[in-house]
Length: 319
Image (cartoon, rainbow, N blue to C red; front, top):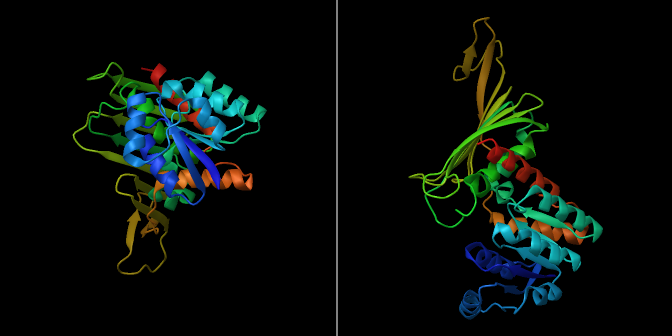
């Protein structure tokens, strides 16, 4: 079992602590939180060992799970990597692209592995259909959330939209050509609502909307390609796959047939992929353990996390 320690014991940090303790692939050693009062409270309430310093925790573990505010990601990652420890780092990977690139350089220099916590990659609805999304040409995403003061220290693009940016980059096999965007600050000092249009070199266009001041929660993405329409509801964990094929000469009486102006007939049919319930955060942590133990590439690499951050920064710069 890999010895693991968590940096940061806030809302998400406590979830990571609980799951690492449950996992059969990790031995949870403890955590470090710079807020002494919170550290004492978490240790007393849950029984986790609280380290007095970040250095003490890093020394005691094989894997450092970084669940701190984004501004501190780089310093935490640097200390862990220079000590020869593998790092799991929450999204976004860091505050700047330059910091992210330095994290990559350090990880290679010290021969350690790193994974970024883009948890939607492990959402069972997405994993059930990802292999079917092969040539998307238009993508539309909506990620809306009710207001929560937690996370408002960064623009909604880095808080919410980056989830969809990463998912899109994982299925579009082309480089970003251009980015146009608009953002509005309503309650926070940074934009609370944002819309972005990302064009890729292969002609694919993605239209992304994110809001953290909505009256309801929504996390839905729609992928359109020549032979299919694929809808992924990340919130309800449901999918809809509508496919098209040439209509047979003698279709079934219940078949759904469309005919265009040229007389070409297409048959519409539906697929219902199996969706297996899971804990996405536990899955991302345990697949990282597998990557370390088997010396394989993590599912969400530091490079991929950096590319998602790079595009997110392009969106922000386009406001």
